[in-house]
Length: 438
Image 1 (cartoon, rainbow, N blue to C red):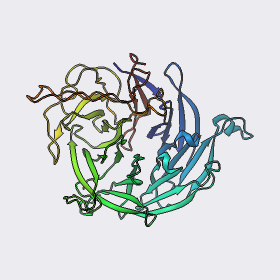
Image 2: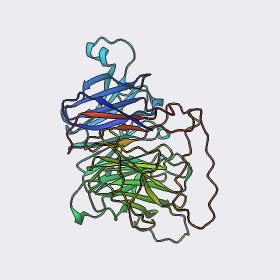
Image 3: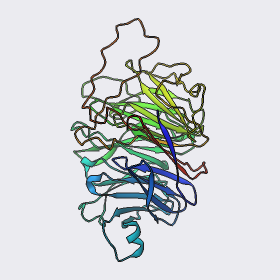
Image 4: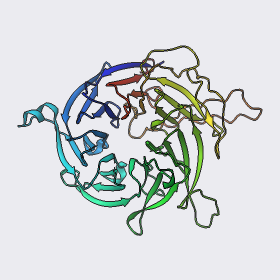
């Protein structure tokens, strides 16, 4: 059972992004009112606004948190062609405004000539690095040489993309055999421009990022994309939000191994699943901490949860609707898997017990932050996979063992937040929690 709580954001214009921190106990919101707000969750599970300040001279498109190893650091980007780095200061300040919010601007990145559409901090094993993409089709990678001096950022790499960039995602894998990688999506509406997703990878020999693949099977504008956390897979999973939801597998090619990759890069690309359950544009996708459950949100006002069973078939396992009121009936009836290469399609999906169906009319972003009770050495938490029904007449495989259980009852909390796109007008944040296992 999950309970949704409504939080009035008090922004004066559209909310464009909501981002949780590493522990899921803080979140930041940004809006067209040119401001960013920081919210803290108290002991009663309520979200309290602890800071609010003007950040840019235009609409703020995205906000993101750095890993807490580098302190409480935020990055924001705006239509004013800049990206800004913010740090929370503990203690008093001579400036009255800073004394209230405790957030100070450390630097402003002004290299872009057009609107900066997305910013993302890289995985912590890469250091304090920031990727920013802009509408002029350029991806810029910055690095802070000294994490104690955040006013100094150097431009390390500048990648060219012939289309306007709309979103960017780092591959979080930290395995030695996986070099740094990022994917970039474009919202260009021209069909003749080809694939809208390109993948870049760092080359140790040249010490530069190079394009290693283009997903030609995604000709529609891309609104969001996300790499799945890698807990030991030899391949990478990439989810893409466009007119539908798609999941791709990127498997590195080994020397001397013959294959038939879809793209011309160094990866064998396979489309694992494609879903049109939203029946409308999909705006956001997000993975849980184990990379086993994908959440997507679209213009139908629903968040849909997708999960693969033992046989690798992706199914809809739950539907959440925006205003938080429970409803009766088949709320997941419109969610189905579209036949595609490498996946098995399914018919209408029936809600699985234990997954809530909530009501609403707004596009929302569903984000699955890490458990605040997990220790640094126990971030892996196995989630039981749904058993297909009816059970096929084959020997049932043994259940997978749970990995590194923790004291919170082997649960992964689900936090629901309103993701307000540029086409949605509302000023509300929703937080979803599990009162039974809390």
